[in-house]
Length: 295
Image 1 (cartoon, rainbow, N blue to C red):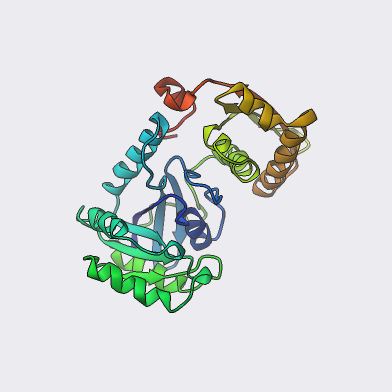
Image 2: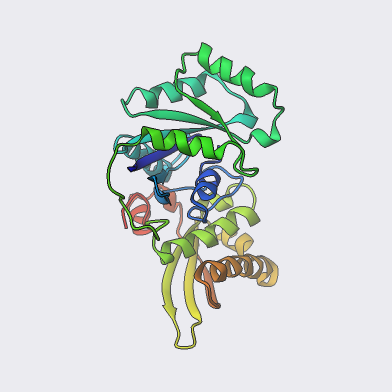
């Protein structure tokens, strides 16, 4: 069989995490319409009789603005050099630019097999697809391009086959029942952060970290989760909590529902909001909150 690791790389909000979740068949990475949703590398494992593809979801390519973003970009660059193949995800709905072509060629030059997933084709005119593909060819992109729609499931089988063909012959890297390398505790924090990204506007969600303090299961099967939402400014804390605590109660309720679905049991969730001024520019706090570090 064929088996190996595939770095999933692309601009912020290109649809990388959504594509991985659909291919794997389970939620292994959070998604939102906002850039920088993915902050660290996350594995999603797709196992078939004939191949096992270990997707490595990476932070979206983004211009550095703070120390956290720098750590995120370092993660992407490190992962791209230590895999068997690369899947470059390109947002078809946004069109293509010469900068996109330059990025694809940059990663192709690493000597690792690479193909391109041209995503979100369900929300763009079909006649635009060959136009964009020709543009990429004119700009020097020689790699295979697969127009796909994760939402509609279009062309995903062909994409999977194209990815598998790039992988070496070898044994499985993970048992059949494993879909991710991340712990339940990590996923609980990510589910809360996902709901914050969806609930709040502007800069506030990007300045938030979620720290799970306790995660345990009671004798009656109920899970107890105690976590902190860490933000950068006192006025951000006020917005996160909302008038009479309504905003926090709402976002916590949405998160709890997803946690219960993920864990398969009732969850008793306790949430606190704390302020750590400009934590995204503190190397100590970035490390303390677990970014850029392997579990």
